[in-house]
Amino acid sequence: MKLYYAPTSPFARKVRVTAHELQLGDRIDLVLVNPWSDAALRSLNPLAKVPTLVRDDGQVLFESALVCEYLDHLAAGGLYPAAGDARWSALLRQGIADGINAAAGRLFADEHRPSSERSSSVMRRQADAIEAGLDRLERDAGALSIGLADIGAISAACALGYLDFRWPGRGWRDGRRGLARWFDVVGQRPSMIATQHRLP
Image 1 (cartoon, rainbow, N blue to C red):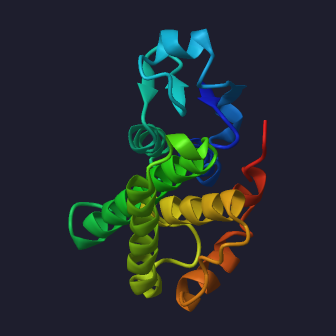
Image 2 (image 1 turned 180 degrees about the vertical axis):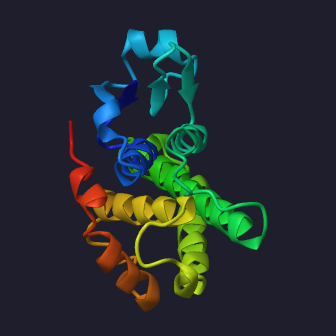
């Protein structure tokens, strides 16, 4: 399989962490791309986004939630609990974390635009979404597994790692001791260390 990724993308990192946790890393060739300019990526994925996975049979999958679920199916990995409260909780945490990542990506991009091209109301909305999402993860921190046992935990860890990468001095940990303690542990897992964000 081939995984098209960018080292700054939290969504691509989520797939890479999932693959590592499922011990599928040796079956996936990583292809570094610039999603803004890579014509080969656009030919595979009409959205020209990462992550994009090309399966062994040539079929193409994209969007991190789908790619992660496919990898879990491939490995019979158990990162997606059976139907019931545990499953809905894991998927909800994935949704919250993905929302944090999306808001953070938009906010970071806006902060780097000329001031005349920024919308203060849009930036405030994204910042509020990040803070509210973090508060919800903090509320549920006690239910997060020690380890990365489900897709919700993997997604949450990648969202927190992305905030550290983009804004190392902003202190998302303030007032969120449970979440911070959890991330201090899971952030040391080999899957998280091996996939750390870096500038291209």
